[in-house]
Image (cartoon, rainbow, N blue to C red; front, side, top):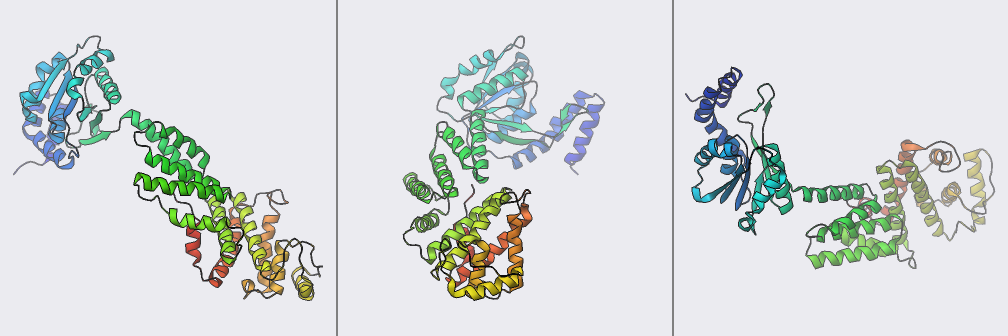
Length: 454
């Protein structure tokens, strides 16, 4: 019965620990390596066909055989010491099955080896590598050899790869059967990746100014800046939108839509619905129900974004303004302007209600504040307050009072998440009532005013 890899690996480890190196090598190549190779090839398939595999070689054989077999390049360029060429090259060629016509070998002196030696050797073959698909190995080799080859490969834009594995620190060797192929990005591309990652992190944190800064840097560095350009335009759109500059946001968003068509890119998401929403928000001459509802929902969505990143005080200020907008919108439907209210016809109801709420009668206000607005709507029996009792009104004013006592209003302490959640719940209920009255889906509305993440 054939031995399992685990059993053979155990035998091999025992021989290594006993310093019976020759016996361990014989066991490895005769019985263990075929199993290692079969497992490695089944788990690591090359996705591309390479013209050349560049191998900076040390005093090893197995890693290079695995790489050649897995990558199956058309040609192999070995660069190593004289010792590698004399004692290991033939084994690699034999085990990998490459022909003499498929490889070339360069020898670098072990003594006083430096990066420039490696550079000159590889550079001498650039005519062979020109316009070819090249991959370079970083797995083994004398350190300066691997470093030099890595620098040259990065400079000339080679793909890079190495064989990773489990490691036994006691014997200072890799564990057979744990090998895996790892593709490495070109370091010069990685710098761009880091900047892109920073841009996206700022973008998804709703911090669009720094995101735009990184996108502008990336536009000058990447080979194909089309996606960068589109994402930058979206960041600019949201920066203006977040500041309620709806006209500037619409201009940027229409530019983004045009770029997507020009570049034949799939839409980044919500472009069409965003444009329709912004067109409604900039039409101040047509302040109908649709406009008012979108304005209220937009500020509500803005508040949600602030809360998402932990800016609860900012979010509470916005939720407070949402509640103000709602009361102003409904009062306006009765011809009541909050700056100069003409409400003599509800004076009696207002006085009775204030006595029930506060314990004393209040005169009609010269200007309508938030609480006064809802007291008037209650007196007018507006649909917004249907099903709400005077106790509910007191509870509602308690939520508002928590904001009034915070540092963002007249107090000295932070309101925090709890106050935000209470005000969010209150605002959401009123928005749902307005949406239902106007035949709108509140979830769709909020989604339309939400910003995409990338």
